[in-house]
Amino acid sequence: MDPVTSIRPLLAVAVPGLAALIILFLNNREKLRDLVSPLAAVVLFAIVASMAPTVLAGGTVDLRLFEILPGVEFAFRADALGMVFATISSLLWIVAAIYSIGYMRHLNEHAQTRFFACFATSLAAAVGGAFAANLFTLVIFYEALSLVTYPLVYHHEDEEAWKGARKYIVYLVGASKSILLAALALTYSIAGSLDFVQGGLLAGVNASAALLTVVYFCYLFGFAKAAVMPMHAWLPAAMVAPTPVSALLHAVAVVKMGVFCLLRVVFHVFGVRLVGELGLGIATAYLVSFTILMASIYALTRDDLKARLAYSTVSQLSYIVLGAVLLSPVAMVGGIIHMAAHAFSKITLFFCAGSIYCASGKRNISDMAGIGRRLPWTMGAFFIASLSMIGIPPTAGFISKWYLTMGSVEAGQIAFVVVLLMSSVLNAAYFLPVSYAAFFGTEAQESPTTTIREIPMVTIPLVATAILSVLMGIFPGYFLTLADGVVK
Figure 1 (cartoon, helix red, strand yellow):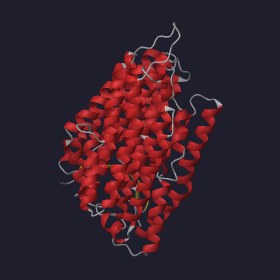
Figure 2 (cartoon, rainbow, N blue to C red; figure 1 turned 60 degrees about the vertical axis):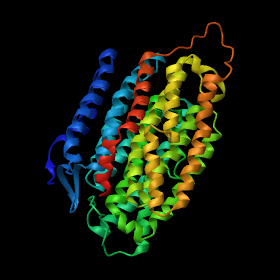
Figure 3 (tube, rainbow, N blue to C red; figure 1 turned 180 degrees about the horizontal axis):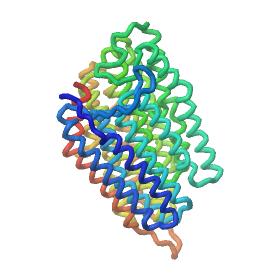
Figure 4 (cartoon, rainbow, N blue to C red; figure 1 turned 90 degrees about the horizontal axis):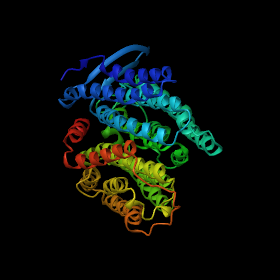
């Protein structure tokens, strides 16, 4: 199918960017300002959805703007892999926008205009990365996302926030300024282009295996947002940010940008065949398996709910990379759809953590005994999202973990079946006790003046995302079709 030339990929980037400018303009008109994000999110999702029929049919939507260097353009392309990421980001921005308004208003947070403007701009960067046609355009938006989320991480502007934000920016920008730029320069030197190519830009180039291996690992660690150990420490540090930011970091944009970039490298820079010939797939699989298990063990030791969820994210991101580098078609499909499964489930879990904090001021799991009887919708949604993280049917996580497990068998790599099973047991060990204590634990004696109740503008979005986690498990066809389009 011939590419369709259209301005829609650029419009998808422009809508949240324009929303950010309008939010800044409406600084003193709070009610109007707060309407901008949900409306812009709906428009963005409509634009992304309008490209879905073309991409599902095997086509692409292209827009080439201008050339930077010979073989290097600033250009957009909506293809199957990009559509997975763009669909997740645009759909979840709708519920995240509503949730953020309820959260920020209830806690009377300061600098709300800056918060909403940066939030919108981060979505522009995420969608720009999703629809990037080459490494140059991708890295531009990757860097922009790092910079625009920095004010969100230091939002509270206290000592803890500044410390976490420093680690955040050092890891993300430091890695890209050194390792990632080296990878780009070497790729351009070898191939004379930075375009994404079906089957791999570097497939068939005249370069030594040692040089290609160096380039590969520069990408693996340069895209630090993927949080592969040891490039993971920024993620728990960033939990000093408000909960809507944590949800943005973990589900909507930032970490998804990291693993998305690595999938681009495997599928469209190196190509599946070259990764296999160089023996990089199995080497990476063992590396990310270590991340999967160690991060889960760290999660078990954390009493702060957001910290536990942060280490869970470090673990779950490596499922996505594992699926790609196993190089079997079924495993690759599993890795791609786990982007969506994790997004719907993890945003629910962070929304729930924020709801608990808004309603009770509690952060530590040890203080949450009995809270499920006060916040039944919140903790019910938490339980459903936990089941998805563990991989229990009929949730989204079951679908992706099933494909990952069957893909490991297809690749003849039984060791990774064991890793997936052990990880699921660890998932259950650090998620289920939270729900059990919330519903069946003995509630601590509260002050007579303490009122713990659900907050509608916070609770409705988390219930919606919990439902999405189940619906994807029952009707996974859209994401499976896109994933099949990537793997073919």
